[in-house]
Length: 259
Image 1: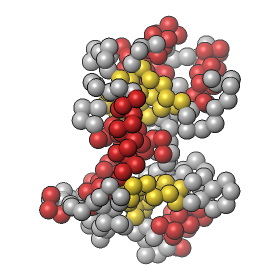
Image 2 (image 1 turned 90 degrees about the horizontal axis):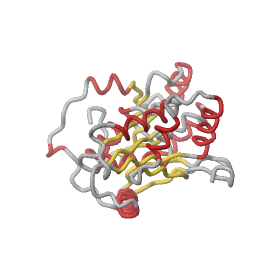
Image 3 (image 1 turned 180 degrees about the vertical axis):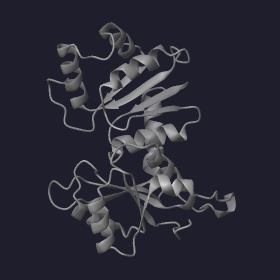
Image 4 (image 1 turned 90 degrees about the vertical axis):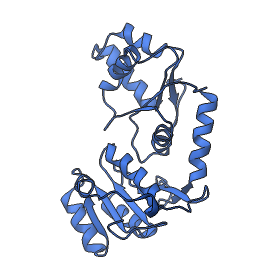
């Protein structure tokens, strides 16, 4: 709001890892009706970031300390009217807005976020996902996973995936839900699942929901065969064998070996 943004204005989230600040500003965008725009920090070149900024007419770009200085200098040179700033710095200087200042006319058809395709067959396409998509996502997951009690979502996939935005949005909307966000997928993912399953606050009815991709299991197989698993294998089997531990496999091609 301090930078003049209002309903329909785009804000680019250029983080080089998953960050709680990404979630904070995703929520903040709903207060003003702004539209977050994702960056594929694993693959986007500076030129592609500039293309996405122009395609969405982004007015504000949030960054973290992982964005190369040379990239920021190039962006500023190409787009001098763009406001660029470190999210950590911005959050320190933010003033609270009143209920009256919040956007009061958002509808289910308004755009919640813009996520770009990978661009493997040409330039990436910006997909405008409405609030109704995320409402549908929440109701679908809660129905087929039968979520009626406590829920813990464990997210390690990058936040520029629809997978991660959907799960984190769901957890943010559900009162009492717990969200465990990894900066990047790492070996500690598996020991964390063991700790969550064994925690005193985790009951038999607590849903532990873990969106994953096939490479996670390839990596797990390698950890087990090399003796580098950061926890006892029996404890991991127990954690994953809970009736209410749900490993959701998708978001990328899955072959017969993984299945």
